[in-house]
Image 1 (cartoon, helix red, strand yellow):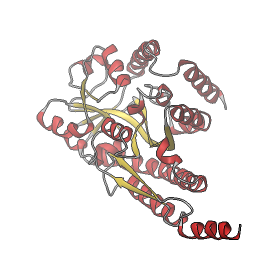
Image 2 (tube, helix red, strand yellow):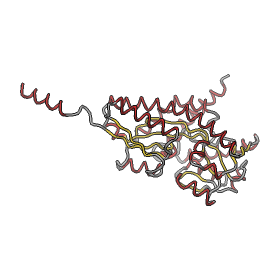
Image 3 (cartoon, rainbow, N blue to C red):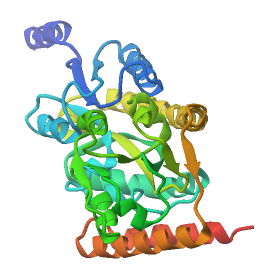
Image 4 (cartoon, rainbow, N blue to C red):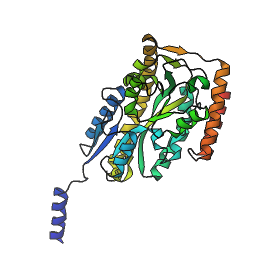
Amino acid sequence: MRIFAFVLLLVSMITPASQAATLKIATLAPDGTSWMKVMRQAADDIKAETEGRVKIKFFPGGVQGSDQSVLRKMRIGQLQGGAIATGSLINIAPASQLYNLPFTFRNLEEIRTVRKEFDPFIASELEKKGYVVLGISEAGFAYMMSGEPIRTSEDARQQKVWVPEGDLIGATTFENGGVEPISLPVSDVYTSLQTGLIDTIVVNASSAIALQWHTKVKYVTDYPLLFLTGTIVVDQKAFRKIAPADQAIVKRIMAAAFASMDEQNEKDEAGAREALAQNGIEFVELSEEDKQAWLELATSAVNELAGKGIYPVEEFKKLQQRLQTLRQEP
């Protein structure tokens, strides 16, 4: 027995308590942006608190390809995670699209109120599909930006409108307005604006500037089309290889990083909006009649998407009811 106990002691001394893990996470976000600075700091904090047992290596700027390429590389184990637009998860978990439907939110207060209730639902649905959600970020409201002023769907029909590759929600919304959208990966947008393949984009202000797309447009339709969100998802099998205590550290630090990032994104969006105006881009105001027409178009698209199972209908009804209650509060 003494020999057996000695052997166990010896093994425990030469075997690490938990295996070190490196999570390789790719993103389209350019290096040097506020988002990447916050994420790199979070990675440093995680490495320090876990005493090097968990490391995060980021691949920024789209070097690993589009969101769909990142998800594909996660499936084969080449990457462990991706910081991607939630719209890219449309074929994985319909719940991920709850915040992405057109004209759902009027302001940040509304999105932040419903997130308390619906973020956990989105995370649980993605978990069922084999993904761990480390955070959901607010990218801001997306606007139509174009070479010509757009007020109506008739105006839009005269333009060559880009929608992200695989964006069924955006494609359906524009198609219902008689617009034939042009689907392209994010990496092709700048060149396509240069060559005239497209002349209209739907994007938030800070991304338009970070990606230099704003240099190719002249007008912003000053009516938010939809709210953009992003998320970091990690392969569940890879995450479970991390010791439970270290998993908790990763989740806690990332949650704090995402909260900080949302505050910074709000400031960045306000600053980017001012920068667009200072660069000579004109903000096109819509009449109440035009706004109502866009709302009706969006409602038609949302109803069509419901029939295709693009989003969880019952949960979206709960979200709408929550918003109605919020809007009725004094």
